[in-house]
Image (cartoon, rainbow, N blue to C red; front, side, top):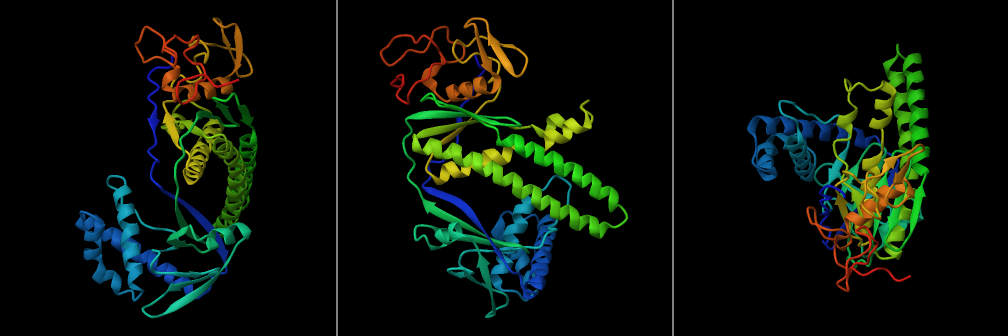
Length: 403
């Protein structure tokens, strides 16, 4: 049996769901100085926070307002700079002095005005600048949807990111879907018998390996010119990120859509401390450390989580310990075979490692499907009888699904 599966539900029963929409735009020269001023304001507020140790964000605003107001920008930039500075200050490591490197702007929803694709933002008191946003039909649907409320705004040198919120009514699930996340695939198993393996993450691994070698070549060729090296590495980094996110988006959208259409709750492993396993000095090859440290497990889980919340789907995080060590039918320990296969002696059955793990993750989230740790008897079914398998597939009410 799994040792203390510790199913930890993510409390997403709130009726408020949030997502962001990214728009391209043509930056004007007027913004370059505002970007730099806002960055300096954030850094000044961080230094004030480190010296004065404010109790909260409002206290930091009181301490920083006279100094930041001297930059001459709109008052809302002062408030936003203090918000950014306080977040950086609270997340800093002990003894470090953090600072903001990249140029960006952040504004609350009361500061800007958005008329279809025309954005108006303030620069100085009673002075404004206009930005024309660029987007597809998908972006137009988001902007023109009356049910979506516009939140905070972030502007970078390349894009405008708008936070969108809506009220959602979470539905009551009739089953569960377990997701096993691996380096090269995402395997899902559901209580309705559905089982599928998405291999698009294998393409992500190939993309990252290709761009890793490309960065090595760029670094060798441009080692005497830091400016050219920085520009080329940034360009190929954007290409790698876009191609990676595109493939992950495709997989996560299919998984969430299946869960929504079949009214299933999503279960994932709570993966933590992965990076600590692949540090220098752990007696691992440099290439292996580099490959595992670029594993996109967090990005994949984050996309599934926010898409599930946006569609009103509940999701849970379970303890990953032992999910690929025990048979999902009888609970016996399995023996490893070649080619990622596992064998159960009690059932005389061979499992694919990823399928077995996804079924165990799905079962971890079903309290009726297995006994409590330390119990000497099986969990009883809906009719009061002991089920034949402690890992059997059951519905939300504890009864087997209809065939």
